[in-house]
Length: 345
Image 1 (spheres, helix red, strand yellow):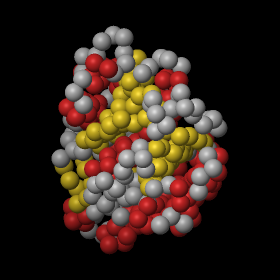
Image 2: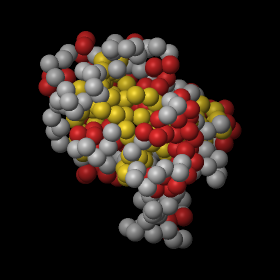
Image 3: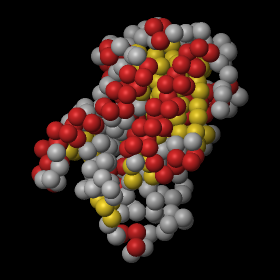
C-alpha cells in the first residue's frame, strides 16, 4: 500500500518518547541453568541478546503502558491536558474486550472526549501506529496523540523453546506525536503485507479458531528441537528471515528514491531490533556502515512493538541522533507485515 509523501501542512512529528522495562532480568547464565543442553555461545552469536527483561506474573501490557505514559507526562508538564487521542498497540491485551486503550483511558482518568483505538500488531506496530496517527491529524480528528506500545510476550513462550526464549523481552513505550508547523517530522512512509506468511510468527491457540483445550496443552518438538504447545508463541526463523530479506531492502530503496534521497542522506537507520542475525543481514544487503545501523537489543532483547521507540529513545539520550538528523525506521513481523518511514528530527 502506497502512502503519498506528506505535504508541508500535513507533516507530523514525534515530540518525545518514554519507555518502561520490567525489573526482572533473564541472563544467558539463567537460560543455561534452565536448559543445560543449550549452546549459549551459539545462541548469543545468532540473537546478539545477552540479557532479557521479563514482566512479573501479574504485570500486564496495560500496567507497563501506564508506567510509560506516566513517565512521558513527568517529562512534559502540561502534556496530559493536551492529549486528545490514544492509540494502544499490542498483541497481548489484558482482555479479549474491551481493548487496552479504553482501560488506559480509565487508569489515567482522561476526559470522555479522548479518542481511543487499539492496533493489534507486533514488531511493525509502531510504524503502522504512526500512519494511523498521521491520518487522524490530517483529517482534523486529533492534534496531540499518545501512541502506546506494550507487549508481555514472555508469558506465552515455552521455557524450552530455543527459538523464542533467548530472544524476546517485555516492555512498553509512550510516544507523543502532533502536527508539525515546520519542515521537520515524518517525510514519508510505506507499508506492505504478505498474509500467506501469517504463521511464520503467531500463537495458534487461545481464541476462536483454536480454543484452549487439553489438546492445546500438549507439548511437541519441532525439527529444530524447540519444545512448545499450540498455546505458546511459534517462530519460524528461516521463513521470517526470508521475508525480511526479500521485502525490507526493496522498500527502503524505493522510499529513498521516491523522496530523491540516497543511503548517504540518512544519518541513522533504526530497524526493529529483531535479532543480530536480522540486522547483520539488512546491513549487508543495504550496505549500511556499521556506525549508522543502531542496535540496542544486547541488554533488552526483542521488545516487539516497543523496539523501535526504545531504540530511538536510547539514540537520542546518547546524542547519536541530533537535531535536524534524518532517520529511517523500519518495522517487520507478524502478519507478515512491514513498514518503513523517514523522519527529520
